Image 1 (tube, helix red, strand yellow):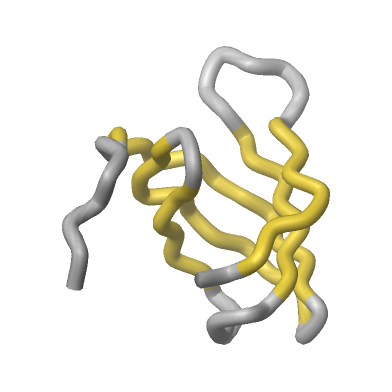
Image 2 (cartoon, rainbow, N blue to C red):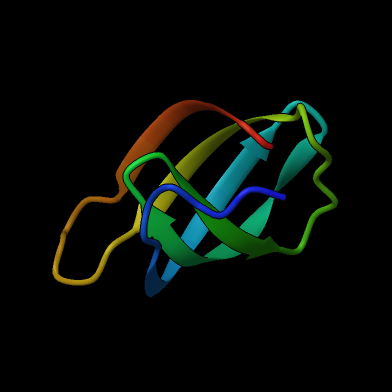
Length: 71
């Protein structure tokens, strides 16, 4: 396994998840410029396409990620 090429920053942002297999809620655990790690209440597998609404502290509107692929 190769080490990460980007530093991940710990966060605790809530997220709403829409995937091609269902919808649910999750928590982003860390972020980097090219990815994130999250925990969710729905089963997600590698290759799943996601859309996210991320509730960021101090922001009124959530950050929208229209399309992402789970790695």
